[in-house]
Length: 68
Image 1 (tube, rainbow, N blue to C red):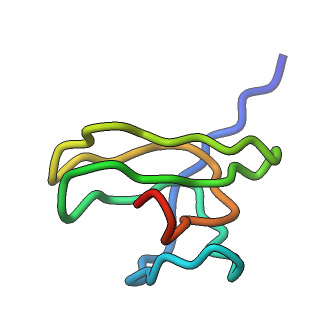
Image 2: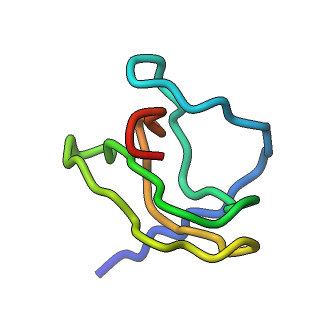
C-alpha cells in the first residue's frame, strides 16, 4: 500500500469564481462562513459555517463565488 501526502508548496490569494479554476490541495479560511467548491473529482460541495482561521484539506478545482 502506498500513501500519498499532499503537502502544499505554494500559497496564493484566491478570488472566488464560478468558472475560473483555482486548483489546490487545500485552502485557508480567512473569513468564516459558507464556502462552495467543485472538487478535483467533480463533486459540488458547500462547507457550511466554516470558522475563520480554519484549513480545509481537500483537492479543489474551483472555489465558487456563488454560495461563498
